[in-house]
Image 1 (cartoon, rainbow, N blue to C red):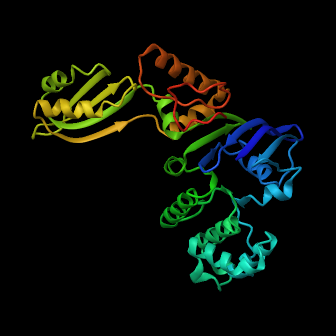
Image 2: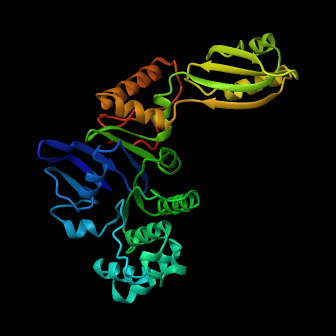
Image 3: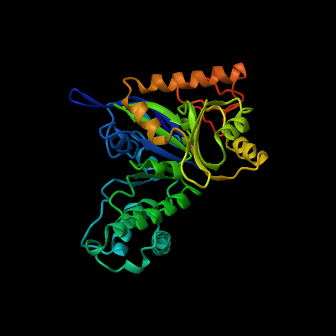
Length: 357
């Protein structure tokens, strides 16, 4: 478990990180998000013991990263945005050097190196100079050094930056497999990647934490109204009559698009419930085919932009949580919600995976 409390880092008159507090429980993949200059890399460098803090504390499984640095650092594997590689070494030579630095016992060293090379799929290039490897293979070598020694916590800063689509898919699969046995903190500007990989996300802006939640609950909290887009074969009056019994619908637009009876229908809902199934059965009841259905709602990108653009993103997030809580208590909505940082208690109907931050 990682516990960050009141972390502050000041450079001259600039606060790169300001009173930052959060907890990352064991066995989860956390996305660490923020715009350029938000303080992500500074925070990761402090968590890993590579940079001193102006004030505050970082605890790794109970060990203070500053006072018990040796014990704390043994629990961490770190891949900076620029992997710390030696280009005139081969991957095997480099990993052997890292294994010695991490004090991997001599009797286990060769086995451990072979193990991480197989896991990161670099065995075939083990004897080539690192300088001659592609960007993708260099990233793999960087990840291999991070997981060498089997640390409990792995911190990855932009692990897929500069890779081609195939390499990105391969690295994502690797990160997902690492999450099965390790706690992973992943920093990335590719929000679809975070959405696909992470159990929870931490969003910081201007050096401060503005939200901590699951990607799904963030999208739900910020969804507001949502739209279902349909292509159907039905007349306008048939569409409106079929959907008249669904109370969550705010507006229906209808437009004919062909001579074969096709029409484009946009259904705006209040966002409180996914009514896709109700819409499907409504058209089944009138025996009219749905040729296409697409549910459009707030994405993680939309949430990120709204929170990081606001003057006080934490306040915006807290207000969204408050609205969700009031809605739940009033019985107007049935969706569960997640208590994020600053909450004193977890709502009884809250997300089972919600952790006090």
